[in-house]
Image (cartoon, rainbow, N blue to C red; front, side):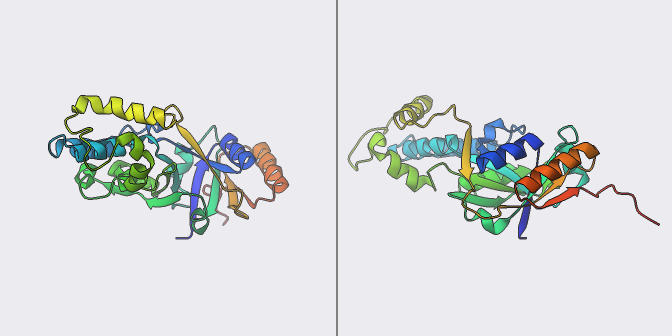
Length: 257
């Protein structure tokens, strides 16, 4: 697999091109309410795994901070399908963007995770690292063949978070801080630390620049149901910006005898 694809509205495509960046979003903005459930389950198991020791509480706080500053963007391994064109229809003017997966590795602090579809996703909560839970989905979505791009704000993992917030966590060896804290007070402590660090919880999007990568967008294809006038408009737009335009999808093209 060397190419990945994203089906978006024309407006999103234009915004992406103008800003020379990808807009990642916090999973809480997605339609599927389960997107954060597995991560939240991991945090709950951390709390429930034993007494509220200082170490246990610190780990819970760190995982919560990581959860709040996690941003994703959905792509697919499918070059096209009937389901994807219909789901991401956008009034018959959606476009398919193609990029090279090798170029994703050139984006700052971005990881590409192949989504795993399971009948019982909760079985993976204790088996995989915290960040990997964002690649778990229910089997009902397997038609998407999703490849998920993930950025962790400025954190690459729990140790990075611990180093970044250590002054607020008071992690000195003899400190009794957090030793007997009640679980109900942990969210307040998370909010306090995030506020001190100026990590805005209201910021649900995160821009990742791709302007430093030559020819990042390999091609653009138009929705097969689009009107011809829009096909002409998109063709001129792509030509203006030097983007390879493939025209309308031929998924439903008439077969000649």
